[in-house]
Image 1: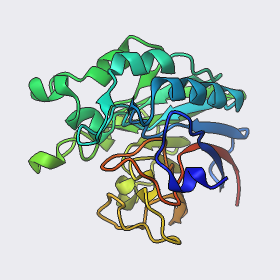
Image 2: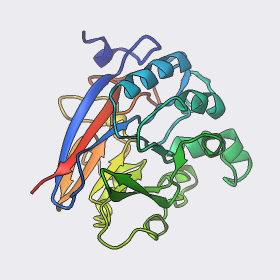
Image 3: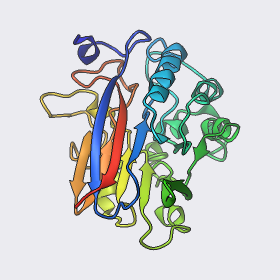
Image 4: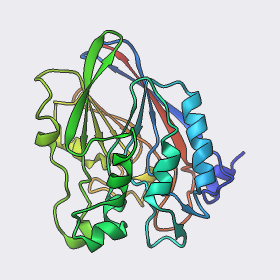
Length: 277
């Protein structure tokens, strides 16, 4: 029962389902259900393609309106594991199905741990190219308009904020470009790999959905000392509310650094967005 809380994420582990309900006064559309698969970090033996296939089946079974992939598809190259190609990963993710489609952004490991990216000075990226050959929308500093229940909303995405952190250079995110086509006041959801952008208090999005932190990967009664964020544990995991805005940080599937999760098991995240006060 507690194996997922203490053991490594293996091909035999099944992620738990974590659900959040977000009520926002500016959401005037019908209820929207969003499934989130964050930080897959597919590699052998820890989070295998076989495990990913089961995760895809479980996600489809939720019947969500929209599926979001907040980045970090490939493994941390410092992890003791065998990497899996982006092409093979996306070939499994192609089976994800939702009425409003599947959308993604890239994570920092998708840039820094991609051989193609590093060898081309970040001019090319294996994950981006694999996604381009699929029906999954890659929202790299752009937005798309979606229709839901006879009404429309916008889904914006920004590229990784920490893509070049090892070089002490700015990331590839550009929020102004992402929101350029979004009409003022239009209901908008922002997909951003790293949750830290939430601290910018950008009122253009009523909800931000992120991953990156793995919930700290180690959770000591709410203290998550390994959280990779400039804000410590402030945006480590779960549903965060600030100034009338909402942030959901998924604990994700895989891990980086060490193949261990302590009291922070892998998760499929399901968010229900509805009208509220």
